[in-house]
Length: 574
Ligand code: GLY
Image 1 (cartoon, rainbow, N blue to C red):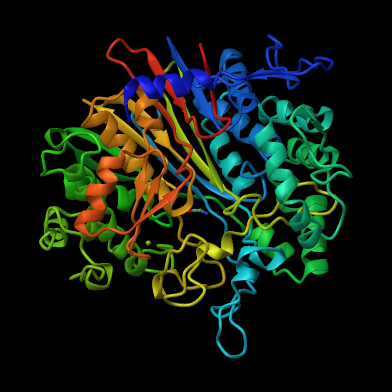
Image 2: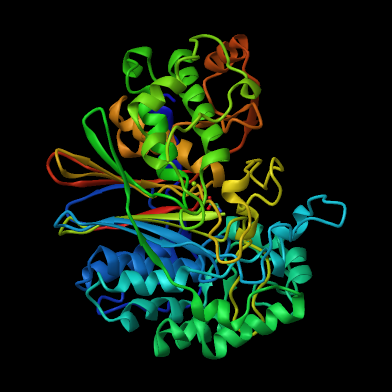
């Protein structure tokens, strides 16, 4: 996209949400965060530390924690908890996520707090007697929920933080109890889901009120505040045991869901080993299975590395076509080879090896679309609605977290008396081989449902190092489009030398093997689209792909940070 146009779009997004209501300053010694008056900031450059997230209040809370002496992990915990209050469509305590971090001493942390299939789950639980898939059951309501992982993840992260957990959760409690003003986008989301909240919840919820929501209304969530208070008072047990757990199970019993007290008590977050590889001299560190994201990212970048992408030109037909074909081949592998590594042997080393990837690109022909039904997964010769936060602190700790409820507002089941939405993450399993899930992705045995297994994800929280030093923190929501958005954002920075905002805001495209089509943002170059169609690609225009948050560390050490123009996403820092 023309750089000037991007700048114009970005300036247009400096929206001030000033609402004529009483201020309630709430956070920390500085009292800097006001949930009744806040502003979206899309781009900035800070000297020391910064946060980018899907909501201005969450980013501001993260900043306040950094300024109170917290490190990047403290800021992440506080930001994520605030998102659970101010961004109910994806921020959550009823979902799960992945944290990819690098401490200032170089230690890498890949923390898996993905949801898990309840113990009662069975392989065919979403098939009717005739074997037909019942997608409505895996996508909505009580039966679509996996055992939530977010709270376990927050406490597993706390061991790297500096401040007391009570300090980190207090802003979220205050905002839930006293309310905050909602944006036009949030009002629209709540109104669109009103019927679903009523259909899939068994008790009244604060997310539904008598009149339709409008921008500037105040959303107060007393039940959610009480749940957060129990977590503050009792730690992870405040969620996985006691009153909150009983409320979840009571909700399950009223709605024929599967999650039991034992499922909750037995849930643990797990440390994994990051996927680490080089691309044009940069070291990329991303999330391993049960996410497909890190492997897909490695495959796509390494498949294009031997081609002179820069000389092809940014979003020229040649560079886009090459990237589409890399995406197609990587996603074919996703469908067959990737799943929870505790249940399925994922051939990770092979999938990202140079020899294997060279073989995968052997049938690539420039200027001609491949056909997905002729591109199977590679043969392995050897004995797997979401939101993202990017943070770097003053010490150089890098933290990338992607967390999810799956679809927008998850299962739309709000836990009665506890005030939070449960995920519909079970739909990320392959409910029947070859049957597409809500993202159109297909899978097979590797991602079949098994009790206790974690469903395959696409979340790709990613860190990039240059000469062993922090260079980029990046990630996005977007279901199966996540790895391709991260892929393109990295190529935009490394190959096309873009700044953070241009890398994020440039139009994106996505191919996932099946369906055999290229999803492409409406504002993509028309001439490139025509050229791709001539080569044989079927294009499907869509409004937006992803909401990427990207931090680029400049040679002088300053932190250039961009929040995606596609939502209310916002940055903060100092
Ligand atoms: N629910 C989206 C993902 O985990 O990929």
